[in-house]
Length: 563
Ligand SMILES: [Cu+2]
Image (cartoon, rainbow, N blue to C red; front, side, top):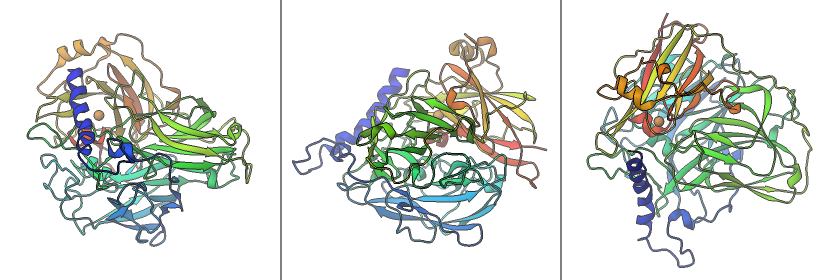
């Protein structure tokens, strides 16, 4: 079955290159695909205030966004690309690429946001909607979710509360409390979460950064933590895309009769902060890079070979201490907060590379090796920190024992058939919630992966501790419990374990909101299901795979925090 999967996915991916062969192009650029014609490292990476808009509030701690269609040239050899964007009222003159918006908020200070859908009423031809998965057919229905946000159910932007989303000229109003300790200084992002169309709306551009600051992590330099700041703190949002020769983003439709949805979207072109294969000029000193994997489905294995790299935090904010890293394996929606020392590389050019992730991570993604370039200058305009702090003001995840353990199965059904879909617990998204944690309780959730691939599992509302991963006999487990649509939830895989639980990776030291559930293992996470102050249970949320193709069809479930 694994072979079939790989072949199917390869064909979908290869189709773009094949079509591009037929398109005439100047002989000087004889490469065979659009991606192959895009010379790397010819344009600077957009940065906050210089290509990325830092959102201007519309009132006191309030923002008013519209979702609009704009066009941007993402590479000098490409025609302008139509894309979808969050406009803060500035009309986005400051947005250079396909990723162009950042909100800067503060822990302890709530903000209100409004999002008004001013996109076309129906999907344009470059976005292949699968009307079997959407609530209102070809209609564009939006819903913004603050990824990593500790918020009320009706401010979360989730389809358990608002299954139909928001249509043209409708406004979604949300409140983000930014409450400590659940919302420390950290890098979050907000992106579209429209039911059955998340993969398409995010692909089209609806994703933005949400940066939380506090009195220690000020973003300036110097700061009480002793880490780089100001121009030496760089957010890097990595996304892969395919292009049509006319400049539009290419999202392949399925070649299975009766289906439009594809199992995963993989690009052959890498964009960083919304520009194709950019470069960044750096000084030979210490930097803080804040990396977000914003890809639909690609798991990155990043390697900045040369400089020393220390990770200081992840999705749930800063850790208690830095950890030296060689490789950063980031699945979609995972973040890494890192310090990089360029001091020994004055005058050098370094390429940020992406390798195929190694086992136990499994992904059918074709290789895409180059990400961006760092050009290290020879002079330092301000030296900044010269050492990595011995300790940090953040947290190591260390929750008390759980009151409840839930076994959640990850299934993939009818691969390569028109009815191909994925699920959690053998049931569809829209059957009633079965995960009902009591407010304030600590629970273990065990993701039992009986598919062939890694799934980055994301919980709304809570960040969690990664407890560990246990290898098990998938086939025996499946045979023992198999139901109509895979293995139902609630079946403990412990008797099928084939070895001891492996501890979390060094990169899983702190709190996270997305975890890699690898095949052949069950992955245990632990979370405390608190609610923001002043809020009463019940509150409805969702959890899902953050390969957004999987989320859309149908690897997502509601959960309700109950009194
Ligand atoms: Cu998945």
